[in-house]
Length: 89
Image (cartoon, rainbow, N blue to C red):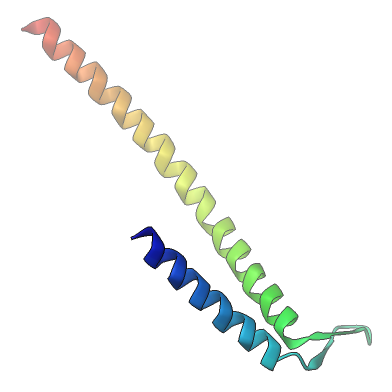
């Protein structure tokens, strides 16, 4: 199974590498105040993808933190209830 996973990773890597080679043309990004940045298209796509992942994870972190806090609170309540019911029995 591990071999299949590594083969799949290699296929995906080579497909993305080929895509990057085919799209190596230079693009120009124009910003405000007449600023411009020239870079290969594959680099611009990589930066945009990475920025999207970072923004998405930042949006989810607060929810994850709140849920973990609530879960630990509920686990403490459950442990206390189990301890109380054992003491009554």
